[in-house]
Image 1: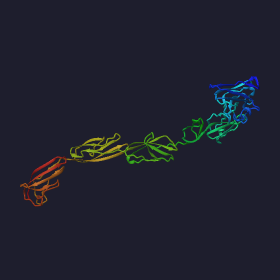
Image 2: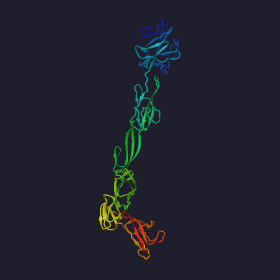
Image 3: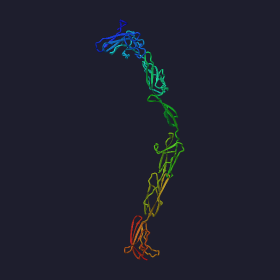
Image 4: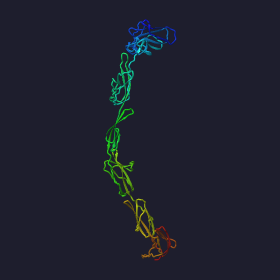
Length: 529
């Protein structure tokens, strides 16, 4: 196309049909006067305003229009050109695209976008697959400043580090604001004061104000401020012990600070108050030895600390708590009790006291305890290696040992005494041994029941018997009297009290000796008055 009716000064235009139809097209182009206002007599289009988002499009549009008409429907790729002298002065080197008037408003910018030129001929296109052609205008895509930014979030509460935003390339710092007043934010620099901000998640905004050629830009970025954990702890230790606080092992009372790092990378401050409690005063008891009869034994302490008593040195089996301890002892033996004082969680060293209880037991087992002379008797008692034994056998003889034997050669009753000694304690027991002769039975063969006081009754003289019975019979085989024991006698009368005549009578005597021997005597006795 020629410029200003000068065929030597032209700009190119390409109309490349993509659908093969045979029809004619009419193409014309012109400048406007004043700039960027449509040629009212040649085309019915609106003013070139609000085409790129600005109220004044004079600075955003090139002063040239294209009017393309076709007699039939056709599809083509369009490439426009312009003189560099026609370019705008506001954005001469920004991207240039084309816009089409659709009869009501300007369509969105089209084309791949070509950088503008200020001399020679500039090109816009190709703009593919167009079927509506009239009219077109070239407009600028201004290179406006953006508002994009970031922070190196997350942060830690109370951090004193200077926190500034990072402005991304092509962007600028505008006015910064926050979604919450809990963030202390400098609106001019975007600096965050963490010492005056609260933990939480917030949205930060950067607003770049609009200019005559660029719209307002707003970007946002989410930040997180993690809390710094502060906790209080109380620790009690015993005098002489230590605890790991304040960066080392401490043995003195006081307040110590430890700073740890949490999983979020923020500090966790632990404030520990250490109390040092004294170790209880050591208590000592004396071992005790006594006889069983001297029980109970008691151990008491005047200390204000509490005593704990155990049956084992490891302190696993607690048997009593208190400062007055009476152990429960039910037999002889050696008993050790372990104790220690405790107060405010502190304890002294474990100590012990031993109770030795002597409880000798004397119990005589004698076999036999009675018998016929000479009598051999075996004596025994409970065996204990801690015992000593002394026997008084009752006939002037002594012996020792848990088991002894002795022969008694004289008739009589002998009191045997056993003395058992353990330590300084003794116990005694006694038993009586009866030594007797052989059994004796003497049966008279005559008696005179005439009441003269001499030989008036029939009596069996006996010794060393355990039992005696007898029966008296007449010559006709009739039982007339019975003897029931050793003291029984017959006075010459029947069991009914009738006096029997003089003559010969018969007896059967049965007896048991002290030695267990059985006796049966048969014979006759004569009554003479």
